[in-house]
Length: 157
Picture 1 (cartoon, rainbow, N blue to C red):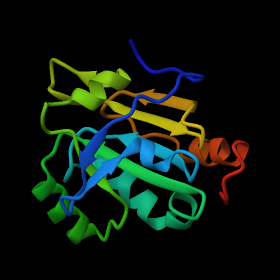
Picture 2: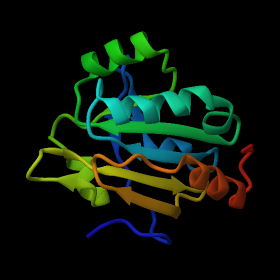
Picture 3: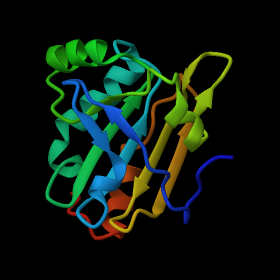
Picture 4: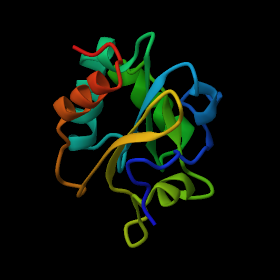
């Protein structure tokens, strides 16, 4: 079953592109979280979406907000992609168990073996306040994310 608005966000711990563990619950009481599942690094639409986050980083990573991007790619793949594109926000690896976190959130495509485009905004209490899901070829509307962040009182332009 997919995670819905009003649900408590399921906790997880994944490694980022530097190999450091990142645990969702560590942000509770400290920051709102934009959780962005994407299919694969080094692909056109995914790169466009992550570059848009990078180019608006003051909205998506600040004193009140952290953005965590998640794919089934390995940490070394994330490390290389982050280096090439200048991503300084966490790219988390849902590599093994393969797609477990994406499955928990209801955005894993078993037939393809990767996440569809799913976004979850989680408030400081750990509650999901916004979700969207897009099929793989379709980019998401990040203005909707900004509006959702404004609604929870996060500093968003």
